[in-house]
Length: 458
Image (cartoon, rainbow, N blue to C red; front, side, top):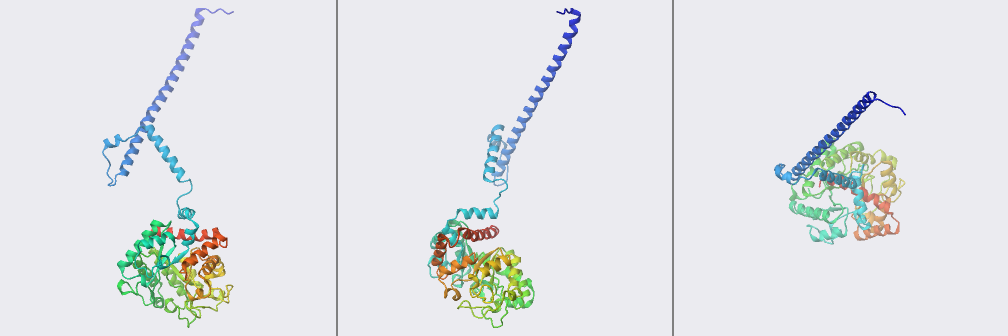
């Protein structure tokens, strides 16, 4: 056992005390740092709370003035409560709006589609007169009957003719009420359309009560060789249609006159030169688009070379697809490039094409193979009026609607008997003749087009 004297033990104790003192200083420093950080953090949270409360008060004050400071402090929460509230709000927002998914037009349209019944979807593909759904002989006003009709048959669009349009004020009131009812009882509002090409087809301008610009015809504009005049005409027509409450115009005509004996189109066409007609159509479509008016080029694949009138019965063109590519189809390509929303399929037959004697509006070759796949059109395909002789003399309303839809049409215009056509589509879906996927494809396309247009021009 070792023995240490007092003289040897003192230096050891002194060295140990020094080490303990140094360790205590380190611990005191750490504790002081922690305390300072906690004080700083509480101060920061408290300040942030007051700032957030102040911002909320300013946002809630409609005249943009800040509420008095004493009222702000009375409603202020503690720092901890405010932090918890912010965290809860953030979590809720993240649950409602998944990362990477915004309410784009596509998402909004799909959400609406998913909320629709099969009956609502079937109604959405029809573009009909107001008389077809109300049963009224001539509609010149919109009241409870219109509201009830739209609730029962939430159709995609309503088209109006001269008999419906009595005066500017009457038309504005009728269309405003119809629009309001469609917003109230439908998943997405309705197209309110009219045939207003200018010239011989002008449901509004032909009525002196409206006092709007009248055009001699599109051929007169085409003869100028100046596409800017087609643009200006489309702007002018869109302007007075919008003022009345319309949001869709079945114009411009995209037919090229290749048969001098053709009378059904006549001066509705911009002319006989395919390139000129294409330039005019492109300018007109842009004029409509710049006014946020949906437009429709017609009559695909081209009615300017036909013999006969589809209004009365069978009409055909003896042109081949190759011949059409160099003439009739050029203006449609121009309209597609310009962003047209609708293309109207005519009822003409083209026996020298793969479509054979089948009317273009019922031909999968014309609507799907040629228009969709070869020409790349992604917008809405609508038939010409299905009450025309070329269809009604050969097919029932249900047969025609189902065949047109199967061929690739998105919307069916004016079947001779709407309820028969509507029930025909429903039965075809229920039996599997038309798949739910096929129905959804067209309805989604309609919804997307509407949302894009209506958000800009409500």
